[in-house]
Length: 225
Image (cartoon, rainbow, N blue to C red):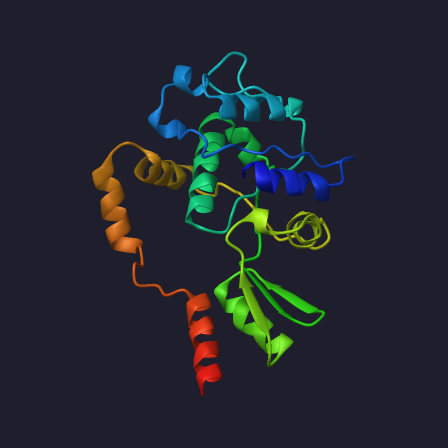
């Protein structure tokens, strides 16, 4: 996601088996566009060319045997914009490279949300639940950093947390229920607003509080006390 993170990732990668494709801004939401419009989008064309196997909808269609990479990993910031980018890319793969997903080649890279450290001791937390565990592990006097984007990490940090095959945290994308996936993509990514509003009203938690702010406020109160 982006040139800054892409540049850092290029420094961190092992070029013998890892390639980086930076995206400039949000890719096109293909659910709202005709195929002719999709094929005019530079970001989409770059993705198609990098994977190298064509797409469904254009003869001869997507050919799984021609893919250039065994793992296609979506790596974006751990915030709302990053989540939106992941949804947009997953929609594209579902609509035009579904065999890539069905064969288990699509993954989501999970960058850490937090860095907990004290002196030379460093721990990374990937969600709010893990944050409490890492704070307890580092102990009193810890410092806390929340990552807003991949570009904030050094090449070494990005390698250790997100790109190193031995330590990275990947989620494989699967389609267990194609009909359900179809409904979800149509509802959340399509151009009919009412269905999306109903879904959000039913499932979204607009009152969720960020654990990071709680930790900061607790430290400030302890300092004042």
